[in-house]
Image 1 (cartoon, chains in turn green, brown):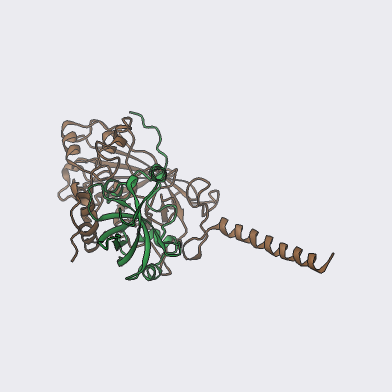
Image 2 (cartoon, one colour; image 1 turned 30 degrees about the vertical axis):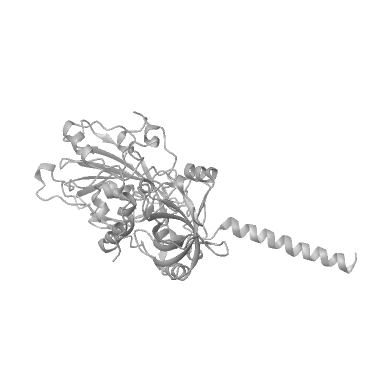
Length: 147
Length: 318
């Protein structure tokens, strides 16, 4: 395992249980597996503040010096980022090329290098580009359906 | 009292004041552009921006109505607003309707054949068959118009623009515009529709304090909701909008589509809540956000993120 750290099972399970069951129209919960999320130090290579989802491209280097290029969609869309004070200017300044960050992501269920970015922190441990409590959900409690 | 103890008391007072002020600030929260994040995490599950008991005109639907829990677009619906599906009632398909239902591959709901899907047999299979978008066939995935009633099921706000002879529903999500004519025209019968429309043909009228809309002629490629329930060219959508207090608009719907459904299908009652005109802002500009599904954005996103995530294949970057 490289420098990325697999989160504790309990934490992942808790987050999985707390995760909204349904998201947007891009199959976010279908594409990604939150029970296998991981955290790693990374370097930003590109950031796009666009619809339908802000996109973050970053590199992770393992202890042998191997670099993996990751493509991530952020959980909040620009509307949710705005709602939480993350304007385009503020966001792009925080995510400029070469910025050192710590990302927590959910990998694709199908494998590969596309991920859902769940959390971004800077090297001071401050959370960046948070979408607020409503980012990506939550859905209302479901009433008991009548078959 | 010594000078030192007086100093300590003064410092303690300042400290307590700061703690109280800090707590008050946290309690208010930080909303967009300095707006207070009122109602977050309490109350009826939506931003309580008005006194519901204020007087109102039941026939005035103008304004921005939101089913969203944070009122700003995207994210989840508020707790009393219903979910993104049309109904929890099990539909009764005709044979042709079942075939059409099976052809649609949505990416919304519980993952097909997953433990999660198996754990909820009380839900119709339509809510338990989601596949990655790369393997699906949702026409909105390539930015085609959503049509109705799907458009009004998404959490983003919708602005009702009332003119003397029509009401426009301007949906933030997709930036779609639907026209409901109120000039007394008669709705054509489904068989008389020469050219289907993505947003259909809609005629509205007041019945007491309820605004009743009947519509038909929707392009068959639109879905009833995010779960991919189909409709045929025979669908007639009946909507009843009732303003139940100053800031709540209730919507009841019934779909009649004898080609695909054996009996009229009643939707789950939906609610929306009024937002101040200047609540939604970007760049200091109050208006609906342009949450347009632009192919230039969507196709790039699909190529670089969405489809690789669904297939495991490397992103194609240009």
